[in-house]
Length: 275
Ligand SMILES: NC(=O)c1ccc[n+]([C@@H]2O[C@H](COP(=O)([O-])OP(=O)(O)OC[C@H]3O[C@@H](n4cnc5c(N)ncnc54)[C@H](O)[C@@H]3O)[C@@H](O)[C@H]2O)c1
Image (cartoon, rainbow, N blue to C red):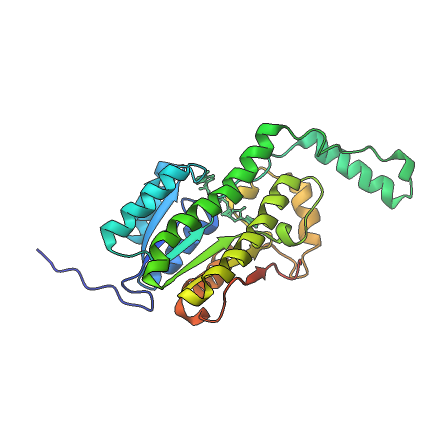
């Protein structure tokens, strides 16, 4: 039997758990942490996507819905038991509001009317009035409940060990909410408050909790968005383009590792100047 070389890199020997890592930014985070030697557990709802990323980074999978607190507790406990430690948790799993072509058309018509000074012709978008309970619940649950469940489960291991780093993926929309995505923006703003509150609670006990607010990043999450809406958003980004998942992975890697030892309860945007 050939002997495996021990992992090398700044995160060698560390165990990282990343939610929603079967796609987009989560997958990029998995690759980035693994490149520095971390053993990565890839969570996702999609088993095939998770298996593919886990195979590529030499990690494990944990297939469950982050809204299921019992499953979250169980999988985190399992990882801590199997590897004897949990060093990093990235709460990243997320969903976007579905695209609504009629609403986009109406928004464009309203924009034209505004530009021409025809304020009386504006048609109310009624995004709030039309938002149903199920969509509101699911959005808040995946992002805010999921982040809380993960953080609570991880702290049960990290606080006694007096070490660990949790990175919560919020959004620029949590800092600068946008009409039409109120449940998403509300959930992401909640993640910022959660991060600051827990960051203060655990700061003196060796655990760090920070949040990242990505700007508009080119991932499958945005695939359902209307191209015209994307073009309108890119026009508002001073950098002139959307971000790439790998660009966010550098920031997350910094916050996950010992280099960010004085970051706690802090919030970092990477938005190409959007916020
Ligand atoms: N793409 C952007 O522009 C952008 C901007 C700001 C913040 N974000 C946030 O970044 C995070 C990652 O988004 P992305 O753009 O990489 O999206 P993505 O769609 O490429 O990846 C999200 C992953 O999360 C998984 N997932 C969804 N719900 C889940 C659940 N309940 N339990 C477990 N897994 C679940 C999906 O299956 C998917 O693999 C999300 O929290 C998103 O809100 C994205």
